[in-house]
Length: 597
Ligand code: GCB
Image (cartoon, rainbow, N blue to C red; front, side, top):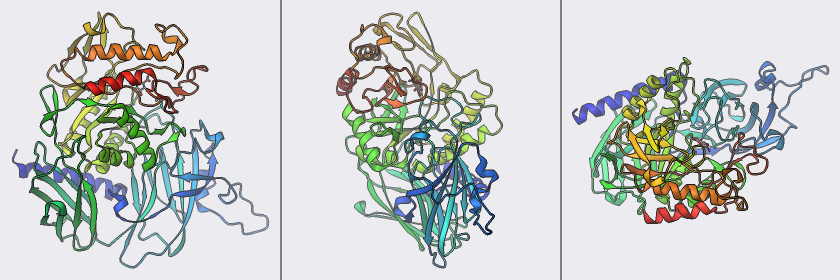
């Protein structure tokens, strides 16, 4: 197809998505919030814990005042507990440790909006359902615990004191994403930053600036304005390269960008980012963007046209030392430094989109990023609402991270089951949609249902035909015993020409546990885990299509299903590091392997 047609098609898809999400739901979040004019609402919020959901019936959000002597109300934000935002509620009060239910949050703030300006209330993420009220009026809802959303409040804000109330519900939903079962702690609450963002009447709402698929020197993208005066002159500046590309936005506020230059390309050894400035007649915004090209050629992955082995590690969005959801730049630096020390050039941010600091810091540190949707194991694909939820989460994930050159892979699902009704149909649709909104990155689905017989893996799944990478989770030596020499393992691949990525492998060990027989898993010894890693590496060394690996997992992490009273105590112990950061023996095996690769 001609480049112009591709661009037009792409813009059309973007516009339809934009209209659907903005006009119908009014929620698609702005990108690059930190470069905008904002007031943070982080800090202490008043809360009411509501295990029975009675707050709905009592209309907590109306904040009724006592009027007569005989009036009483059985709820009040004032005089009750407070919780920190951002932050999960589970780790802030011991009675909420395993709580899954409703907590009402309230924050008051003073604001005075100048005439002609617009105002938005932006949430980095709320897990899982959020109903948001401003001054007693419901302004909207959001479902999904790991992506940003916002509401325009220009016409609703009062000059002076305003009150925001958010009903947060982290109850598991049968038709949720994820559904009922998952192997991590269901941290609920307003888990990421909350900001009030002020803009001019017409402002730069969104933009996409990345290298064109397959190119090392041509930028292809767009800028979207929102507001009354949407036909404007637009300039994209890259001062370090003396670039000032000029364009105009059309009657929909959309302008196309295409220009070439000679870029110093982003890669793990040289994570080069350029200062980018976008100027319209009524607004301007600054960003740091890097340029790189990621492709599959046969069974190889190429970064900037050169073969690269993905030295990954899995991580959850948890600060292991503090036993809480990770939410800050410091948390991100801490977690990602541990991945760097292991020798990684990539992180798999499992099993949901992590906060924006993780992506930004990874980019600065030269770590490629695998972004993932929480379409995890038992999803009810036949529920009539699930397809739209999946699409929406995909939009929100891509929307936030589309200008990040570190993000090289969109992982659309993990360990879903091919026999679950409608699974293939819905995930194939989602894959097509993902490719249509972003053709520049690689797409994968993670599968663990391969057969293993006579020391041979038979890797079959329809979704692999639609993926750029065959991602396989296998726990040989832990859930599944070895059936022969590791180096004699054979592979029957459904798509023998595609690259294979071992997205999970490993086993559990309690740090310091090395007193049992090392060949028996039940003693949870470091030596047993170490041995799994040694054998896995023997197997990797014989795999022709192998393009990368990511061990499960960097740190021991909290999970409700891991209650062995001696060895686990609420922690999945497959970490290469304990939750305190102590290195287990397997850590050294991986570290040596990555040094050699
Ligand atoms: C898996 C899942 C991961 C689990 C892990 C385990 O296959 O993808 O979420 O936590 O196994 O430890 O069993």
